[in-house]
Length: 413
Image 1 (cartoon, rainbow, N blue to C red):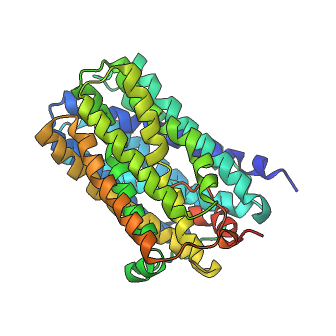
Image 2: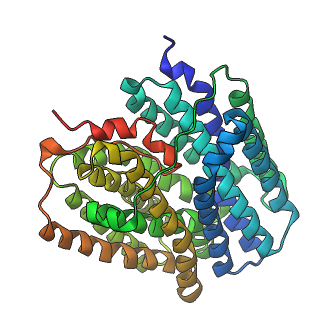
């Protein structure tokens, strides 16, 4: 058998290019909207449209893939995304940008679904955990590195959008030339909200909270940087530093959560998020030497909570429930990603750029209190009944099949 890392390299290469395009858009779009005199609230609505498109894509993409196959689906979605990127440079109306971001979000959800289902199919079950780790590191690295190129570009023209379009187009090359056969399409299944809450209330509320916090922080970080007077060279570092914190801290924090009650880790991380957010709000216009370490810590804590919440929910689930459970929690996260940017933007419109972190603290602190209360209401799962932590990306419902279901279902010996 070929090395599984080699058999999926072409698919991962395509995803890396897409993640680079995604990272560029998350930094570029708020800056361009600000230059076009969009209100902060409108910038929030455009960011919310991406979350809505993501939910739409997750819901319908399975039928599209089944109808046309993986290669054609990937090609159609990547080509559409490339056109959407160029359309941002052609249109100036806020309503057009909302529509484009909605379509783009659906395309990203579909592309990640295609890629992850393909990787899951081509990887032996015993090695899916390691392949998932390789895939996650490559994706995070693309998100960290790509936005830094904006610091050397003129953002008032079409060049940056052309770069995004080029990355989307280039993602077609490794995927459409692969010799791997297209896999079958798994049925998309979820659990009801009541069943989710009965099974793991902290997991349900936690994934909603993570969406409410992380989506606005990542999509409005550039607006915050501009609002406190940073130059472009420093603004383009804000998003990468947040992602770098996640890349460095998520795995050790998750493995640490395997020992003892995961809810204590979730509460502690939310407490850290709240404290760091209050500091960032209270400092007003911190120096770069203070700002960057705080954002690194915020990203490391906030972007790690989702996977730990999923692992906590897995502690209470049966193996057959794992795939619908993870899919359901991803949908809950997506709902938060729709609501969060609009709410955070309203606070920023009212209180200024620093209001972003006052909003974050106002969401994180009550959740930390809720988790502490839940600890008093239900006994912790014994350590030997824990599932293994998996660094699960919030990219598509198929992520559960990319080794997560098997890794989570195997209780510790």
